[in-house]
Length: 328
Ligand code: PBG
View 1 (cartoon, rainbow, N blue to C red):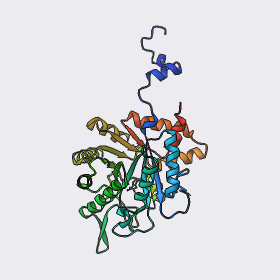
View 2: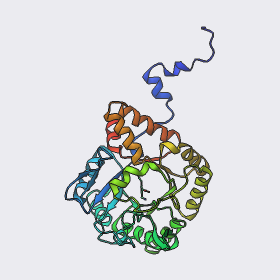
View 3: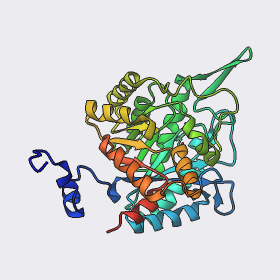
View 4: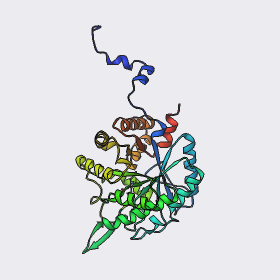
C-alpha cells in the first residue's frame, strides 16, 4: 500500500500540522453576548430554561459586561424587560426606559465595548407581538406600516442613549429603511444598522421568551417571521434589507439554518452575523448537565461550523465560556 498517492492523513498527523492547515477558527473578536436587563427584578434572577443566563438589574448588567470585556469580549446585545406593557409599546421608546438607561450606564463605564440594542416591540406590547395589533371580528392581524413608526422611534431613542448598533428583529416590511431614515433625520448617521434579515419563525426561540417575557399572548409569529422551509425567500429578504440600508445582515437561528447562512454570505459578501438562539443553548446545556455531551467540545464545534458556513459575527449565550476556552 506504500504506493498510495493521496494520503490525506499526513495533514492530520500531529497538532502542529493540524493547526497550520486549519481553514477557519474562532477568535474572541467574533462574539457578541446577549444580556437581559429587567426593570422588574431586585437582583439577578436565573432563567430556568437557560442555565447560566440571568435577568439583571442595570448595575448588575454593567458588572457582567465589564467582566466579559476584561476577558476580551467586544460587543453585547441588549434586551429589556419593562415594568409596564401596553398596546403601543410605550416603554420601548421611553428615554428613561430600561434599555435606554442601561445603554447610558454601559457607555459611561465601558466606552470601548460595542453596545448593540435589539429593536423590537414584543417585550413592550401587552399582547407580546412584534408590531401593533388590529382586531376584527375575533381575528387579529399585526399591522405593518403603523408599527414602523414605533420601531423607528425605538431605534432613535437607543441611538440617543449611545447605542453603537441598532438591530431590528421584528420582521415588519420596510423597517430597515424606516429606521435608517429616522436615524439619519435625528443626526445619527454613524449608528450602525444590523438587521435580522433572515429571521425564521422558529420553535428554537422558546426559552428566550421565558427570559424576555415576550411570548405572544395569542396566535403566533408566522405572519411576519419566515417559514422555515424557505431559503430562496431568505435571499430576497436579505436583498431588501441591504437595499434599505442594512450594514450587517443576520441569519437566525443558527444550527438548523447553516445552508441559509452559507448562501447569504456567498451571494451578498456582506458582514454576516448568525444568532445561535436560546433553544440551541438550552438543548446542549441540558444534554451536558446530564453528562450526555461534552459541552466545551460540542459548543466549539458548533461555533467552528458557523465560521465555516460564512459567519463573521456570532451571537451566543456561551460567549463568556468560549472566551475562557479559547484563551491562549
Ligand atoms: C424579539 C427577539 C426574539 C429573539 C431575539 N429577538 C424572540 C422572538 O422573535 O420571538 C430570539 C432569541 C433567542 O431565541 O435566543 N423579537
